[in-house]
Length: 221
Image (cartoon, rainbow, N blue to C red; front, side):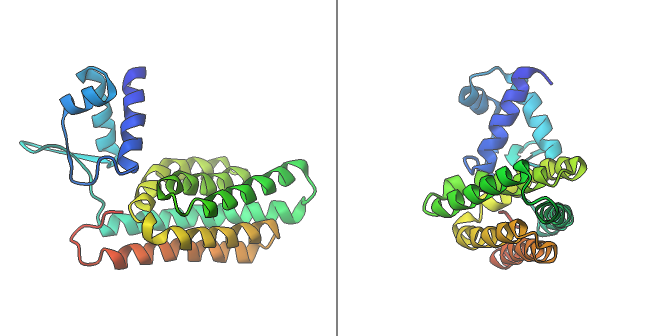
């Protein structure tokens, strides 16, 4: 993929996740060329990659539309996420328990606590919450010092942010209260409580997601 196409890919993915292009909306090459000030070639390359990632769908005679996520796909994504993040949060808590005075540990404590305060303070600005949510979870994965788990979480983080963004007006306040509890447990070095709260956090997100969209044939979050 060319550098220009990669730039279009990142920008268009961001705009889909942010809700600028809602699920089901048709995307045309001319529209995107105008929006991103590029030719059709990088737009086509970007759309092909986004189709592989599941953010758009292409159908004969219907063109390209922003994708929709089915309930079973969402449930699978949450299951993968729960496995990854249970592992990473346990490792984070163990680092605090074993080396509480290490400068890197102290630095992370300040970072995660500041991030929670920022998230809680941004509840009135829901457009700021999805990227903050992603930063919170990726920060824990980075601090866990497990490159494999971090890489896996990064691979699904855009989809997770997409789901969160479409439901942030309902889940935002609850999710940041849960983030605070997780951060407190990690800083306390409580491995069991950290993993339990993370599992509950992800289960709550999935349960609320499914309940709010149960009447739909497809679930979009």
